[in-house]
Image (cartoon, rainbow, N blue to C red; front, side, top):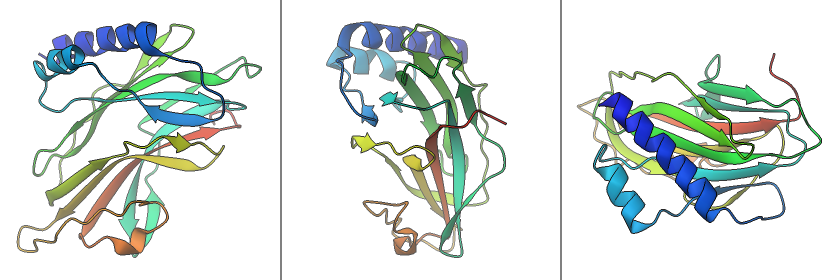
Length: 202
């Protein structure tokens, strides 16, 4: 089933890249709007539709997708990255399309896989990521807004708010979670971010 889902996701990435990309100026990360038939196709394999995002960033040499945890009112980046890639030719913008799959299961929530299709046509994909938590998820959010990308600064993609079973918070998610970590009410908050950098991967 996972292999079929991966194949369907790859096909959808290719179809939408060929059918719907319009050239846009500036450094941006922009949600892709699926057609009804594309949505129906993907929901046959997974109830959670993947997040599809177009990106175009001038001057970027690398891209990393990372996990941040809210601790004592501040975002703390976990060691290592969930996904990382770099380009050799920096005279051209880093651009393409990414897809993120995620789980909203009560105690196994989080990012489950990521795939990137570069405009040049090469497809990079992570191994499947497993999740398990002592907390129970209260709410999840995806960034559905077009985001202006600033080099070396993270942009949020996914959020998961969770609590211990005996502490039911309201799972509040602020409009700008990176700038307002103090507004969260959950015991455990996990954020998936993407950072485009003008530095190569170490």
